[in-house]
Image 1 (cartoon, rainbow, N blue to C red):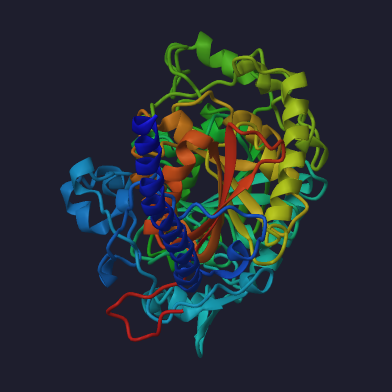
Image 2 (tube, rainbow, N blue to C red):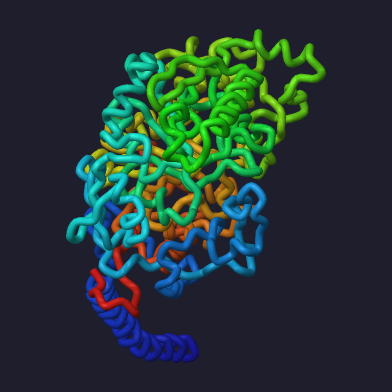
Length: 600
């Protein structure tokens, strides 16, 4: 018994030592939690809408992910376009201007820094006012102002650029020019024509005017000595992308656009066997229109102003007409400076090519995939529309807006694609878009104009937001199922892209980026930090990102986002799935540490 009593006595003495330690530990934990809350509350990144949602779960300081930080790039990288970098042009050949095509830096030469905005950058003017004016400091290019002011492309007044709607071939304004075009092409008025591409777009006044007429235009221009044509277009809130018709196909599927346009775009259409025209032919849908104004159209009255001879321009026009005829185009209408050709609506004309061994250009053989358009060389042959497609032509496509929700014929070319899946996808995105608007009220307001769906399937998000004052660039991975033809058949626009590389646009050109499982699907090929650095490059300061990802990747994404100076919060999806989460992020407006303006 004595031994037993001694044992209890020792235990009792030990417990008196443990109790104060336990109380002290609890007090220290409580104090640490209180002080930590004060500290984090003061230093948490606060940026407009993203920091306001009370239901959010802050994951920016998650201990599960390694901290990431990125330095600032030098100020001379403020307009850096990695895959069309003028600093690298002399490395590449001048034949057919190949140096202006995409040439992306190798992994060891990729920039791992944050692109600064120009000194004095302001949040862009909101749509629709932005169509007619933008801040000079956001696109501070005097060259284009001095060289093109006499043609009324744009005019600098005070701290703004104004866009009077002029152009080389429309001195009376773009609206009068398009009015004449509509007289020649009545299909522009009744919803038959919905999608267009403008090659050599200038500051995209033509595309901007067509938006008011219900026609969605991709304005295309290279990064050249005109200085930032595409950047001006996007600053105005008009769809645009960097690109050039040279040796590679444009990043669009065949039979996509309802109309193509060139207004003195200086593309040598009749040279190199007409390969540039062949690419226009490929991307136009059957029955689509090609519109040309400028040399050699109306050469009889214009040749003196073109520093040429009437004989030379007559020869060039005849050669152009012969090439177009050989590609199954027919003259549709012509008046003054505008000529319109129409691509054959059926395959009867192409059958003649098969039966004529001496025909030029010849018909492409079946081994050449018509929709292959990511680093695919342009071939000197005619891509003939598949005879099995009966409803892809312009005459058979439902008119806008009916075509948006009509099941496209080409969905059957997508593995597993069918009408039922298409309808379910539409319903799914209506639900998701409604949920997004609850989480981010800026969606649907004038705060968001330029939107990119970074890995769409059928353009479901764009369709769900079609009534809002925005447009969506639908991106389909060059490694994913080929769903981009379906997007175009719906009357939407988009492009192929590989997110292991930089996108063909300038910095600060999109208000909202949407991601749906991109990091899950591409994690074996593309390094997460490089994709997010690219997202940061193209996202405008104070712009947003909605990232829908598997729970496995969310913490790492949030950690990189913090290094990008983004404010993020984690939210539940509309289905409240535990396997998938949403990150709602906003990019902070900051200025280079070398700039004189104060950081805002």
